[in-house]
Image (cartoon, rainbow, N blue to C red; front, side):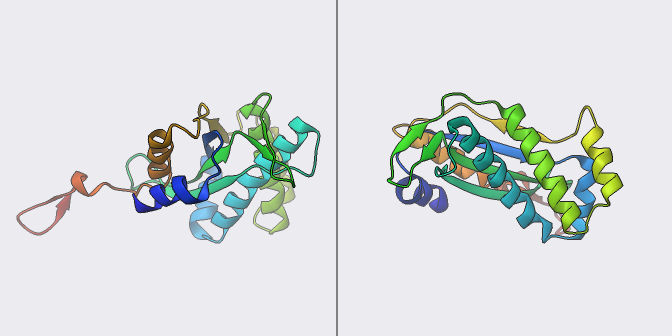
Length: 188
């Protein structure tokens, strides 16, 4: 809760933001589970996909979106390994002079395709995927990658933005979901 408050009051620029989620296919999850260093690659690639897509939308390489990314490895039930990235991203870009330019449009399918291609290429370069397996994954019609972008939240909607900030850093299990049994074991 304190992080969410600090994020919304001291870190995020007073511009609209969106909550983004980047997920990878199940076939790659075990790879990340065995080599946790790849979580950094997941985060870096999510930002690179946003940056590349936003710069293309503005046809400018000198602009940058604001972004805070939180990595999570738990799924809906806490126990299944599901590496994914949550992000709060400015709904536009900043120029070098600090001017904010709002996004003219948004196509998450395009961001997903950039994310997919970049991540597979980076995994191949890191010698974590063979070239043939990378090309196989690139040929899938339903690739298993997912990119979601929620609606923009105006900076004035501080409580909504703070709620999203709490969500992206939520723990795998809520403490009130656990119950201590008489024998000392915990039940979910």
